[in-house]
Amino acid sequence: MKLLSLNQRAALLSVVMLVVGLLIWEAAIPAQNAVGELTEYERLTGAGAAKAGVPPPSAVITKAWEQLSNPFYDAGPNDKGIGIQIGYSIYRVLTGYFLAALVAIPFGFLIGMSQLAYKAFNPFIQVLRPISPLAWMPLALFIIGDSEASAIFVIFICSIWPMLINTAFGVAGVREDWVNVARTHELGPFKTAFTVILPAAAPTIVTGMRISIGIAWLVIVAAEMLVGGTGIGYYVWNEWNNLDLTSVVFSILMIGVVGMSLDAMFGLLQRRVAYVE
Amino acid sequence: MKPYLSIEKLTQRFPDGAGGDLTVFEDATFGVEKGEFVVILGHSGCGKSTIMNILAGLAEPTSGAVIMDGQEVKGPSLERGVVFQNYSLLPWLSTLKNVTFGVAARHPNWNRQKIEDHAVKFLAMVGLEGDVIHRKPSQLSGGMRQRVSIARAFANHPKLMLLDEPFGALDALTRGTIQDELLNIWGQMEQTVFMITHDIDEAILLADRILLMTNGPQARVAESVEITIPRPRNRTEIVEHPNYYAIRNHLVQFLGKRSKELAGQPTPAGQTNSPVSVRIDKTETPDDPEDKRPALRAVNS
Ligand SMILES: Nc1ncnc2c1ncn2[C@@H]1O[C@H](COP(=O)(O)OP(=O)(O)O)[C@@H](O)[C@H]1O
Ligand SMILES: [Mg+2]
Image (cartoon, rainbow over all chains, first blue to last red; front, side, top):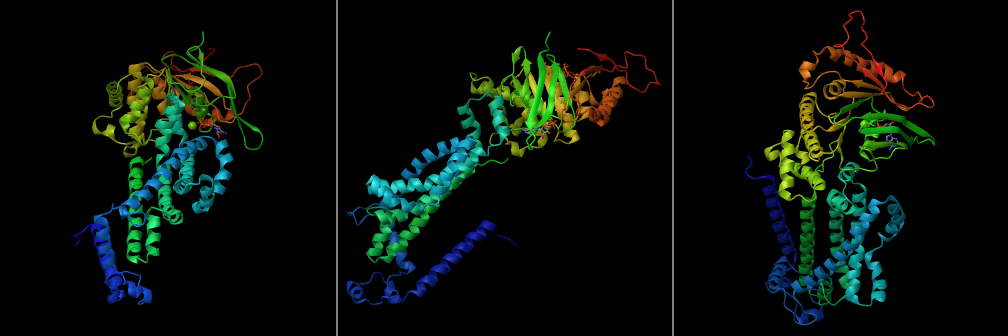
């Protein structure tokens, strides 16, 4: 007898796995350390050093409650709410990302339309694409000077490639029949680009955008650890320096949640532009 | 006087991939009159689509010219509507939007309501009404898709309608229905139609005149056969017309045998490659039972 749908059963299983996982984790941490942070004395004497930092899930949940109930407090440069830190990171990611989209999509369009441009630009793209975005950081810091702008530049440079390549690929792959429909209806180049080529290539372009936002979110954490000051990446590193592993674990989870949300947004967009031939 | 649509010494060559040239056809010369329904019949690969793409302005011939209504065809135009074999509907648009896409291009200053009403009217003419018109092409059957494609083309009232094997991918039953719809819509609009097919019965049912092409390479438009069966035609009744089997046999003969024999012959120097006009009419000539050959009359046009 099937009382529950597949999705319901899967959800149930997920909850069971979560609960079991948390219980095992909780049980694995010795009780005396589960109370919370170590006292100053214990830390200085190194008591319980081996497992001291790893918090049990109960502590993380308490921390999460505490942080999420007041996410936007600002008590000086080293003590800001998680909401503010994530806000900074999202701001950098979106700025770098949209600048990249602004360049990559029109440019991808052009090289997708012209075989000559495609072939001429391809070697440069192939060399630049595999460079770890963080490798640009020293150069960016030297040339741009400002650390904030450098972080945005790193996001820009890492999100540009998937969008550029996918746009060019999508545009180049638009069926000739559809372009011929535009031609027999005497559509000009702009009308053709917007009413035929763009919707035809949209699924491929949005896939590129989705890959880019994922990479950008991966990179921002590392970039902020390097650049410092604000942002979720800096927050993780700062809490590590404070030996507050509860906060570290909590912020790791937040990074996951935000990344998932960003991805889900593009998943929605992807579904909107999808079509069946 | 020049015909309405005049194809003059049209030659098409493609690189054959081995450093040489492949001549698809050479110096092809023929005409189509205004309001005429002309069908071109030939084996696949002889160059029918190539001719049609040139007529549509989607491709350029190696040499020669196409002149329509006194003007040389250069590039595609709204005056030449095309129905492609694979329908070429835009899959991200609904059925209705696929037609309004064309209407809006034709009438940029019409308002939305007018464009939509016009599109709905033409979809209804090919039997698409109600909810169906809001579906995406992927949710339609092949026959329905081709109807949309026909509606899109006719809704624009082009001077010349070009159809490239429009029913090639359809089952016989659906094909029959849509052929009737095509005849119906053509009857109402007095359009000039140039259609490609390799189906003999379809050609006889629809055409005023059938152009016969020899096999490629170096194909020629060898004959122009007048269909001497009065309209309106009905698929069940035309088979009883005395000319039907005579014409059909002539076409079968050509496609089965003579298209091969005549293939690959270059044009004699100084001559154009116009088709020989053939008129088969059993109702005019007294029926001679001993003469199995159809009455042939070559006319110089
Ligand atoms: N772009 C092209 N390049 C090279 N050869 C072509 C090209 N287009 C068509 N051909 C050749 O021209 C011939 C006629 O093709 P086509 O017009 O499609 O035939 P049909 O429509 O009568 O079946 C074929 O031999 C085909 O291979
Ligand atoms: Mg063809």
